[in-house]
Image 1 (tube, rainbow, N blue to C red):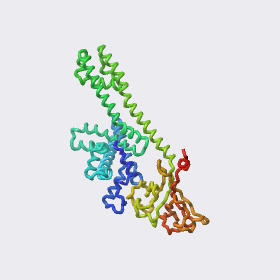
Image 2: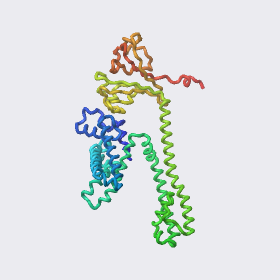
Image 3: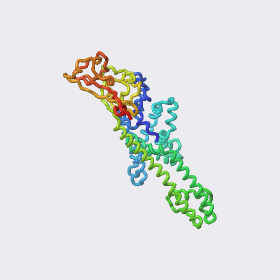
Length: 425
């Protein structure tokens, strides 16, 4: 399914949001943006967003339970009225959800024009499933003769359960594996279809004379070939001639191998995915990475500035901005606001000079107490990034005086490994 993977991306991508924050955003767009966050599964930074996820999930579960219980005649006869009320309520929730997603589609596809984004959602897999979740329920009102057909399409509601993927990484792995291996899987399915058609033609050739009522034409053996190649073997259609039986045995052996192909592709995909995740986790612990947490006060010099204007030394980054319950992976044009909690980090990249970032608490007897920044005795590889004072952060200038109780954040560019540089060999 399309991530509803979108639901996870908005927490870490500011490209769909104007970079100057909500201040300059028109009220209509602001409403649309917050509505988008509300309908996006897995975005639980606000109580309203979390409540919406709970309501839509509960509505889906209730609807599916009602649909199943309605198939039992005795239960349906006893609670039919209640089931009908519950179905009306839940389907109405599905309809509202669909139109809210139409309303916010421009944020789902920020690179497209509003009209194109609307059509992209409407004709996406997720959009079609959302539409089928409620439309067949109302169509019999206008087309009574097609009620039985419309009822069949209501089964599409169960596909909405794939949105639970947004909550569980383990389920996301399944989606990622199927997506990454889709070319190989399509190739294996194509091979199976070709073999199915070929086996049907072969069986028709040898069995038509003996069973003209069963193998009537070239396509009458499709059901037999499908059940044989896929190792189901229902036994309702089978060869009776000697040549047909020999051919059936060969096709059965061939079917075992054909079914194993997509199974092996998916299994290999899972192994690759988990190996990659493990390798990422292990390599992450080997890098020289340091992080500090800083909360911006209303008087901090960074407030109102863009990230790219903060003046951080090369190699030092603002890794994460925690704004209320919203987590932002910042881009250069993101504007810092009072109350933001910054995670500042510096890392040693392969092939680059290692860096280090640390915080020093200044005591009364510390030699830096009362000293201006320009007069500090520090190495050329060390830079004073920030001063934390009484819960607020100060961007240091040359005449900024360090006081007792300050937290001084230093960035150090380490020298290369001396043994490697001085080794004559």
